Image (cartoon, rainbow, N blue to C red; front, side, top):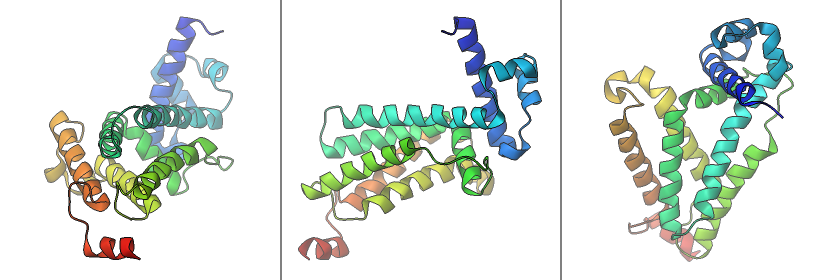
Length: 215
């Protein structure tokens, strides 16, 4: 069992590693620099993580665990499907806003910057499947308009990821500081509105959606 000091050091290593992986990528990250920033010897770092690959996996697993807990908490809670959709979206935006480096690491991973041995864990698929299943069930009971739930879920992930990682570089004058609480709230409202229109929540169904429903 780890002592509280060991847990604190491990958390600090993960925090510094997350920042380094986001800034430099997997291949550009150096373990000795992480150790220096944490204030330990490189050899001590291996006490917590046997290899760079293990550290990379631990950083992503921590983010995935938090995402799954957030999603499960909303889906298992009370409220109508429409209320849960809003809660999911707002919680997701808040989480990305608080940890943009995690999203940057995933974007780098999508471009091939990851350990050769790394494979997306089944947990990631499980989280996405839970959201897709929720949307599909809402469509089955006629709470949501018919739209591809997989495309919608991935579209939201991409939209939020873009705003907190790429948009500040491409449109700094419009985005300002993406971590600013006022801007975060604005993004929440925007994402909720987009999804509400896609799912026909509080809006008349589009002509295309109505045709699909009739068919």
